[in-house]
Image (cartoon, rainbow over all chains, first blue to last red; front, side):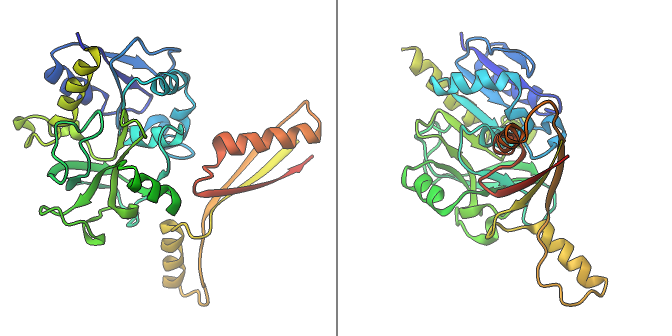
Amino acid sequence: MLRASVIVFPGSNCDRDVKTALEAITGFPVKMVWHGDATVPSSDLIVLPGGFSYGDYLRCGAMAAQSPIMRDVVEKARKGTPVLGICNGFQILCESGLLPGVLMRNKSLHFICRDVHLKVETDKTFFTGCYRPGEVIRVPIAHAEGNYFADTETLDRLEGEGRVVFRYSDAEGTVSPETCPNGAQRNIAGIADPTGRIVGMMPHPERLYEKMLGGTDGRRVFESAVVGAVAAMG
Amino acid sequence: MKARIKITLKNGVLDPQGKAIQNALGALGFEGVNDVRQGKYIEVDVAGMSEDKARAEVERMCRDLLANTVIENYSFELAP
């Protein structure tokens, strides 16, 4: 039995997509947990889905990071429960301090909704174990605030510790300013905490997890989590 | 007592909205606009505490929620 929980904030809009993907891939029901609840049920993994929590008021993810449920998510994450933040979920992870940096307005100021290529930089996280480092995958983005920013020292630390998980690239895996859709520093599309159990990413793997959706490149994010969770059960 | 809080982007942090405003000002014929940086202005009405206490509380509000100190600076003044 794999216990996955998806946190639902007012304004989340990818919560059911994630639930559907996780249930199809794990074969077990996924718990939907409301933002006003005090605790997340015991879980093998927690997902913060995409959307516009609290209408993106103040800053994307800023209000959600202070919601009652996030206190428990932060506590569980610090004790080792794996957490995946997708899009708005990534913004919430940064605002809650579980991941460094911040997602700023896209350099072009436009909301960008299209498939992008990602270079997988590491398989040493809970959510990328089933990818090969260096592999290029195609996954959609849909955001206006995905422009990753952190100071140089933080960026160097992320790179030095192998915590950059995905970078925006072209189909061949070339990473350059031209292949960066939103102005993110060093083309960063996803990062991990030092343990590799907390991952935030702007692209939406749940939108390409099966052929009917037009591709399966996002599927292994969730398969990796299954493999990781099973390994953790011993 | 009112706290008038200004939140601005740190120097060196790219401000695409400021750039867009600058371009629009140029398009309207305003000359000599070197740079535009945009930010936020927030008023918080606090009651039932001393000025010192209010100052400490507003400081904490800025740090914990109102500003993201990775990219933003904040400053505020208290007015009766």
